[in-house]
Length: 173
Length: 425
Image (cartoon, rainbow over all chains, first blue to last red; front, side):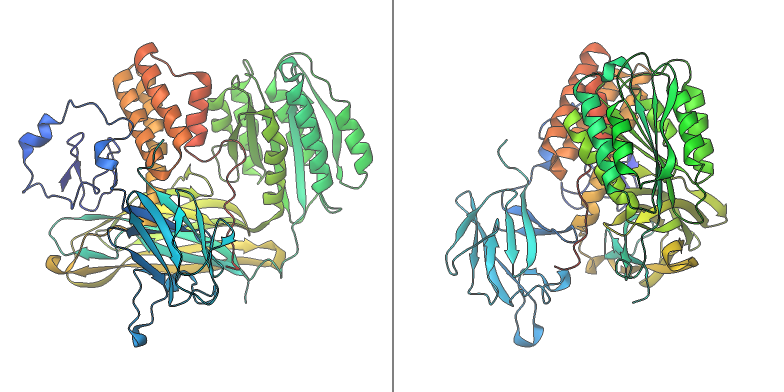
């Protein structure tokens, strides 16, 4: 059992959003079991106002982004605390990219094994093509290889013909 | 490739830790047509348009609706049937059911519609049901598209009754509300059935696109009477089943027998993806791979003269010792679940509000706003926050805000976001 930190309802292990109040039960860390949980702390939360815009437990650090594979709506969560290699896994050559587009039709779409680098530094997201065979496009325009191009929330990145969309959670509103 | 439906499953967690307690997993089921587009002929359409021409429709609204109706006529083929009914205090058949051949005459008749009078929807629905049942189709899709901007008084129950009668004969209903005055409870009740849905058109400019999209979608239907049956292993429990793509819709599941559930999923177009989210309680199980659900999809492919086609899918869970399992949740499953949770929260908010529990209602709307913000719908998140404040202060949400929330959380506001599946990329 998990106890919802927002409304103290008891929920089954594996629950993602509390069935009573809708609070996120997973982004605040691994679920805690009833045995380990400090009940006092939970009860002190009971009358806290329901989170507004945006709630503390749902803000994601800026280096956590999501790439959406547009054709299949698959979502890939990416940690950019270090730069991430976009490509296609080839275990025989020892290439294991951080963002493996193989399972998303990367081969047919012409994604190179080492296609591009996605990074986050000094508050800016960037993508850099690594001289891939079929190129990288940002919002429909091909970017020069070996040259980091800035990105924003909602930008479309096309690797070969595979279209991805960048989603940044804690963007400025 | 044999035409049919392709099924794909994604679990919220790929691997579960062994434990003594039951656990919850979410299963995202996505279905799309395979091998169909090139092989099957289009099914003929039998469409009846029911237009509210009460005086409140005068001006921009009626102009856009007439324009939209004329474009529908253009979209129809020679095998399609079309009829048009208008209503105010009374109802009239403007175009009796006929093949869409003499398009110029049809459009001339549409051009002459004028706005006047009140709103009595049941008469319009009754005439529409009569018209839509005139053509004799051995196979095809019969549909009533209703558009209204106002409240009908006193004949609500008759409207529902007529809608149900049609639905029981395989005639679906698309109910479109325009503006802020119409009764969303009524339209939602009338369309609470497979093959039916209500949609909110916030601005008149969207009418043409909404109509055109609907006709396109109806033309793309390839599978009919899709049914799902779900068998669970002993100890496992199906807690819920909801449609999440292309829009959110709760689905009625019936426990037909011990550990066997069934649901009707209606007719499906061959464009886009039908997505469903299942909540499944998994009993404590030892280390190993265990089947928990057997899903069977049964459907007809009238275009290929194939009946009772079936597809099966076995859903297995992998259990490993707790120390070997990292807690990781699939981002795609979480995304669709988050939208569904927002929809459920707002539904529960209206229930609380009706009981006078405004603090709880406001909390639910706030949390729904948080969920919508996380899935990236900032405009709707803001509406939810505003109405949460309003309900706390005034004890009621605004007419427009409530409609935006009820239909927006389902993905049924304005032109529905295209959910096409590109197979080429």
